[in-house]
Image (cartoon, rainbow, N blue to C red; front, side):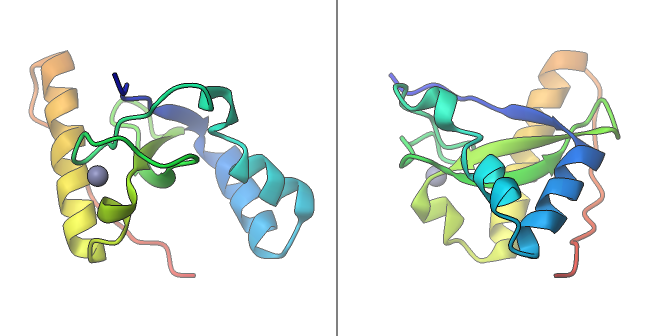
Length: 117
Ligand SMILES: [Zn+2]
């Protein structure tokens, strides 16, 4: 059985790493690429469609609804990764909203501000 696993990161720390990785910093690239290493033996469920993902899965970074200081890495299968971005975001946010609603019983809306590369 595949399992849904979400990884939580400190937002500032992750952005720092990501910036470094974009400049070609080997350590940063290595660190980002290895975030799913601990789950190598597990089959991971795609956050959007529930199918099993490849290893490592594509990471979709999402805001953590409860904390602005955190972000979530959600695993996606290759099919969902290849969706057009608006669809991918739309479905992912719908899932996140559902999860959050189930936890708190409150409605939750997300503002999406894509980062420019
Ligand atoms: Zn999928």
